[in-house]
Length: 536
Image (spheres, rainbow, N blue to C red):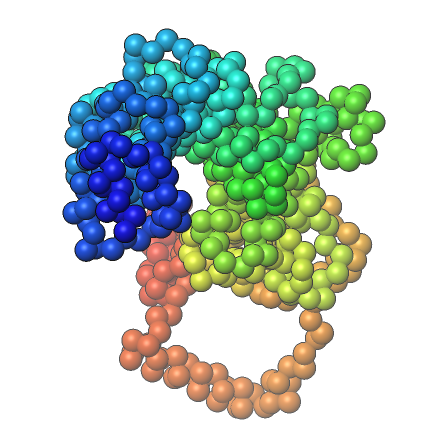
């Protein structure tokens, strides 16, 4: 067997490279191992680490590390690996030794990459290794290695796995997030790593050159994605900007993220993954810094017919976000993970920046003309979002309703015009706005203009369904007064029985606009009326 042959070769050191290479080839795609061989795999891990601590050829080191990476996919064999001494061996091979000055010998690069891959697997799969990473100050060493990669050639793989390991550490340890953010200056360092993946050329403060943007290579895309994921962890608690320097860092990062949204990957799937991670990171950027996503149109932009402009501003990045959102809606699954981040981001942009809100509203909620169909019926972006307002997932329907509400400047009458009362009832009940009014946030006073088609149809629009209905005959027109009274009492008795049997609870809209039991609602109104009379 390849495992037993590898174990013998490692112990004897003779021919270890060839045997391990064959073992690696046979197990390259192996992720599940035989439980009966567990003890032998542990022994092989120990033998490999003992061999790595010796003076051996570079090619043999690579073969050893590849084998260790394959074995480290199994959590159960990591006990002999996760000692301080063995972790230090791997860190030294990955050039995470503080004594190393620079990355000069290109022949060492494959060893560094494989050692970093091993550390990624080991840290991810072993709680003991995660604790040791704190003791060994691994995050600081990784930041130091990332600095060495600056302006170096042929180091993309090293950067990629350095960033992946930083992502894993910051994901598994909240202390490391804080250390990266404040002690190790991780935000500017990781931002620089992200910028280098795109080869950005700056034309002005927070404005990048968008001309001749060719698709990224697979390697560049992977590196950018790892940087985005690490930055997401580091900026998780960055809702408020506390200083001018913080504001600059986030605006600078937002400008790079705008460039990222306008950049394509080598494949459609990679482009979507890249944009998805950029959107996740933008969700951590303070709302006051998101205006960087739009920029004043230049003379060059005016000559480019492909650029999307609104009120003299370049809206290309916002259009990418809208297309991304619609694509995720059309997918029809995993809305909470795939759709809510971009919906939340667009909601924050619209609430904070008037030009973005007005541009998006023109795309999502254009002036109504045809109101013959229900708001949720159809293929427009408005129809798709209104359908989400009654989705079974509470988080999804809340953020979809919130997005449309903000587009309507948090005015109830405007929201009902586009969605109908039935679709909006959940949001209005949660906000205490069932009786009408508007939300707490302030928006500009510019008014919506109704089309002539909407104005002529408005008297016949059903406010509950939000669409035009033909007048229905009134079944009570042909009833006598006695028949009407009989039907009314019959309905009252039915409701009374259901209420007494606790099948339903009659509700009313209280003075604060929220739904409350009818008895409490009547008492609240009576109390308010007495207080009003007493004050008079």
